[in-house]
Length: 94
Image (cartoon, rainbow, N blue to C red):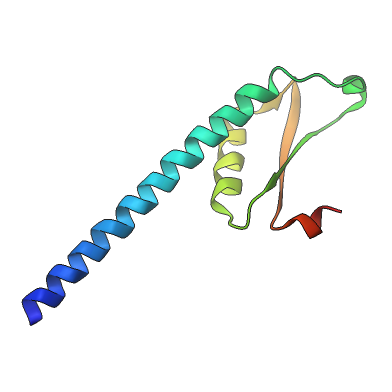
């Protein structure tokens, strides 16, 4: 019985580790895609924008953390600083 519980525990541990690794990989892809796309957008009032704000709709904080970490390495968006704003649900937006 003890051996079986230990095996179940190891399976659970391996499964949750795999999910965590998958989420990290997914977030990395999302972050890279978002910042790659942003390079191709222009705004009519771009000269008057002092900080580019990228809003995300996400009920967790891991994507927001990954995007902020990416901003630390990619300091500028269109030669201006960037900031990430996270909304947990649509009602928060407006």
